[in-house]
Image (cartoon, rainbow, N blue to C red; front, side, top):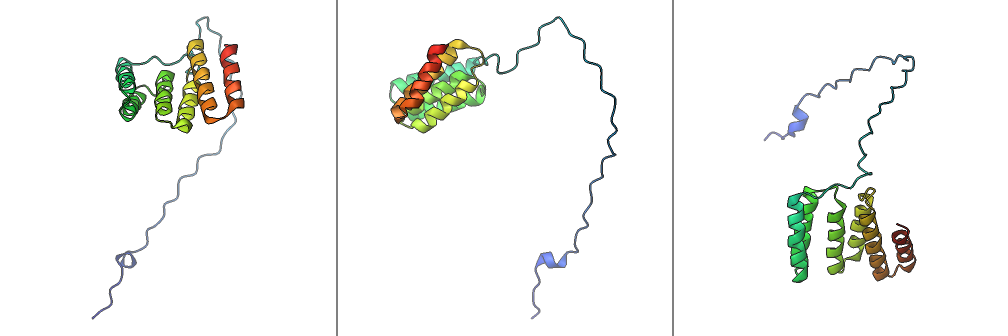
Length: 157
């Protein structure tokens, strides 16, 4: 009997190709500043909160109905679908947070609230609602100092 050698040992070694080196950079003289335009710049994504799509709004209505019946897991499933449809909508994250509060998963609820707050843009109504929600969650977790800070932020708006 002849000893078997692994297949890898029978293959010839591959030659490694080296990547081409980029040409040395040449320093160009600084460009003249761009002329100012009278038209206002479009808002950055932080300036304006994303509108909720009709499909996501429908899923949120379904989730609200499920939460009212006590079907928390089904509500979370609907809200996660809404999140995939409108990933930059703070309302979806706040609703997810409320569902996780109903499930008594306060850690996840706090994280979703913080994510929602990061997406509120300059919408004061959503900011106030988010900070109030965060204060309630932190108080339920026993973080009274954090709850007071969140309430102060909500009151300052």
